[in-house]
Length: 230
Image 1 (cartoon, rainbow, N blue to C red):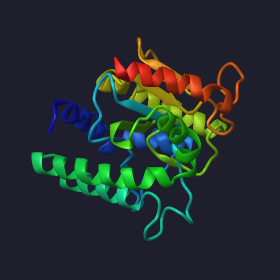
Image 2: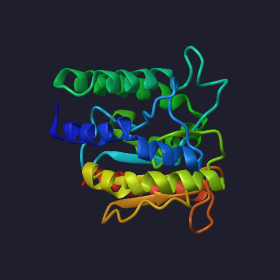
Image 3: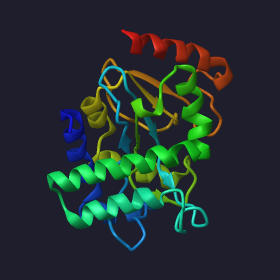
Image 4: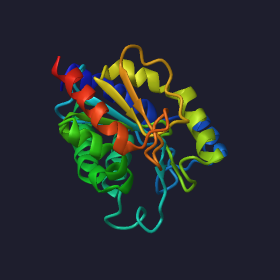
């Protein structure tokens, strides 16, 4: 494994094996764990060709829990959940870490492009900036699941709880991406230093200046392409 992957696995394990205190705080804010009643949470993924300074970190709010699409055979997150729960059950070792990295990465790379949220928010900008999925990392600010809407008060409470335990800025410092694509105008990801932060409303596509995605996407895609070409 690469050094970056080892450091990311340390970060991921702190989320997957989160303690009962955080789990209770999360549940009190309206979050939920994975099937089976575990406290395991979702750390996201790092693509196999992600490189600091060139890779792109996509950040969202939370995995919305859709019972008819999730907790069924072949559901959206079934393979991701299986990889997470298997790693948590087996514990850490070189072999177990490698297996989790392989299995969770493959699960996300297969599942993420099928999400309406991904297709509406990240895919258009990544495509125009010519960023392949293998060079992308992804994480939600809130690491659990919720049945609430992304912009609801409950979802914001969950995000604050998770941000206190797993500050998004720490993940940015760890990965050192070329840019962070944040599909939210309400989430606080902290100080990202000189990393380019592109943010917009994940439901409407409107950015901080009030421009629709059709108006800003070409400019941001060209800027991202230049940053990655340095």
